[in-house]
Every structure is written in C-alpha cells, then in structure tokens.
Image 1 (cartoon, rainbow, N blue to C red):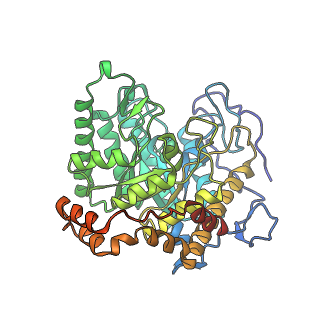
Image 2: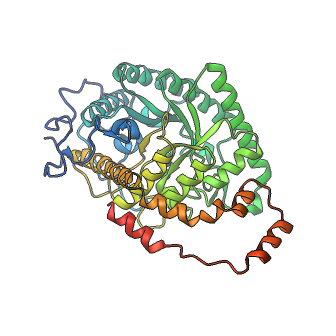
Length: 450
Ligand code: XLS
Ligand code: NI
Ligand code: NI
C-alpha cells in the first residue's frame, strides 16, 4: 500500500501540476471494508457496524446514514497554529489548482466506495478553488460539481452542503452580508443539484469579540434576514432538504450567536423561523458550550429540532474543537438513546466532522479513523437497543414521576391545578414521602449494557 510520501514538490499554482490523470487506485491495497464481527483482529474491517443488520426494526445503515466530511478527509493537512502540514497524501501535488480539485474528488469517491457509505458533506471552497473574481470562482465550482455529479452515480448523495463563510478576510466581521448571500445561494443550488438532503449554516464569524463595538440586536436581525432569504430561495428552487443551524459557542469568534441548541431554538422562535430550520448538533460543540452531547441532542429533540449530528468528540483536557472521531462507547450509547427516541435522523444522518491527529500520517489512517468511528457508533446503537429492550431504565424513570399519575398529578399535567387547589391538597395530605432519585442504580443499569 502507498503511504504518505514527502512534501509535494510541484511549485507553481496550477501550472503544469496535477493535470495528468491519476493512474490506478488512490488507495491501492485497501479493500472494500467488510463486517467481520467482534472477534476480528483486522484493523481494516468492521467489528460492530453491520450495515444490513436489523436493530429495533431498522437496518443499521439507516439508523446512521454515515457521511464522510470532505474538508477533514481531503483538505486536512495536519497543520496547527504552531506547525506546518504533516500530511502529504500521494495524490496531492501541493497546489490548489482546478485539476488538483478534480483529482481529489476522484479520491473522495473511491474512499466512500471502499468505506461503504452513501453520503458525503462539503463546503463550496473545499471542493473547488477560489478564482480571481466571483465569476471565476463560480465557474471552478461548476466544473468540480459536474464531475462530482458524475462520480456520485445514483447511490451517493451529499448528506449536506454548506457555504464556507469564515476563512476569507471579507467575512471577518461576520458573513450575513450581501456577498455571503450570493455564496450561500450558489452553494444551496449546487447542493440541490447534487441531490443533497440538507443544507447547513454554521456561523463561525457570526458573533462578537466585544460588545463595546457591536450592536448585537442589529446583528441578530441581520442574521434572521439572511436566513429568511435562504428559506425563500430554497422554496423558489424547490429544494426539499432540511435547512440546519449548527450551534457552537465560540471558536473562532469569542461569542457566537448560535451558542447552543436552546439559544438557537430561541432565536428561531423569535424570528418566526422555527418551522423552517432544524439543528445540526456537533458533540464537540456541545461540550464547548458546557453541555454533554446527550443534553444538546435532547434539547433539540424535545423542541422538534433534531435534524443531524456532526459525529465527533472533544478531549476532556483540551478546551477547543479538537474534532476527534468518537471512541467512547458510553457517550455513543447516550447519543443513540436520543436518536432512537427521535425515531432516527433521516433526512439527516451522522457526518464525521472529525479529523486525524496531526501525528497520524499514513493513508490507511483515514480508513482506520472512520472504521473506528463507525464501530463506536454501532456499539452505541447495540447498547441503546439492549437498554430499551431490557426496559429497567425506562421503568426507573417512570417510577420517578409516578406521583403525576395520582389525582393531583393528573390535574397538574392537565393544567387544572391552581395554587389554591394545590394548597388545599398539601394540607389534606401532609408532608410528602421523599423518594430516592436512584441515580447510582440508573448508572449501574446503563453500565451493564456497555
Ligand atoms: C466548525 C464546524 C464546521 C461546520 C461546517 O467547527 O463544525 O466544520 O460543520 O461549516
Ligand atoms: Ni460541524
Ligand atoms: Ni466543529
């Protein structure tokens, strides 16, 4: 198998580089990844993810709808604020040329095929280079998109597309500007053209560094206008996919407006957009906002807003978006408890918004990371199904609220108990019996399923 080689040598932007067709496979030596069961020692096989297996009445692949994130897998270089790129994939020539973009797109579809998933996610700027003018940028995008459409065939589609509105200096004050609207409108059309099932808005620059120079009310109004324009455009072009807001509390901006699921829900309600959007919950963003992923998923779910999951995880000792593949089976089990309660995520799914560590530099690491992430989620699904079939956790929760099945409880839930009535009942019944919350028992039951 070809491993990553040294730094690319092609010096000039586009000139004479990457223009030759890539000979043979991009991932020679890597087979189609198969399910081999928990006893397999093959690191290029699934031990828990068995696409066609039925769990709680649905195929595993339909519970997940796994997606490869183009930006991490094909544009991630391993660079960090302190160091140069570490990854030199054999097909990269060091340019950002159109020819290179096309070659990368071919690598993407070979990767997807070998991994055995049906979806991919992209930003417009990951897949095609910026031109000198907006016209040229759009032309580049069109060319790469035409190739992607051909390579997708009939089986593969974008889980979601998005417009990259945070890298260029033009977006440094926020992207809900006229230019941003144009970019989003083009990318929304492209996502629609490729048969995409969702479209994401992540507002990395929609926020502030200090309120001393910021009119927060005005900015939130602008953001709402921008999103309303997206809704209108979606309807105009007949895009039936879901529009998703992806909350994140900070990074790169100090304070981002879509702080967490509850904040985003409140924003959508205030501006009358609640029926037009759902949320894309990213687990690493959840922990950055001081919540667990489970909390964010439940907040989205009970508001009818759970649309998609950016499946990754953070590091408990690191305070930023480390975008790691999830490897914690307990966390995956909690995630899947929410997903099952939600009846699945379709038309959303699980997008691996996750990247290799800087020090992981072999081509096969790209596969190993995704296989590990898929197996972790599959274990989560199997465990959550076990917990649901066993029923003791549900029973424990039911008992905790059993006083609401009494005469008074029923009256409260039906909105028929005013304070006078409640006081009368309190006097009649005297001091209530205080019952145990059974947290340790709940944890014991949960652990026994892992
Ligand atoms: C960054 C976000 C980003 C979005 C898409 O933290 O997770 O990758 O998912 O723009
Ligand atoms: Ni994300
Ligand atoms: Ni993120």
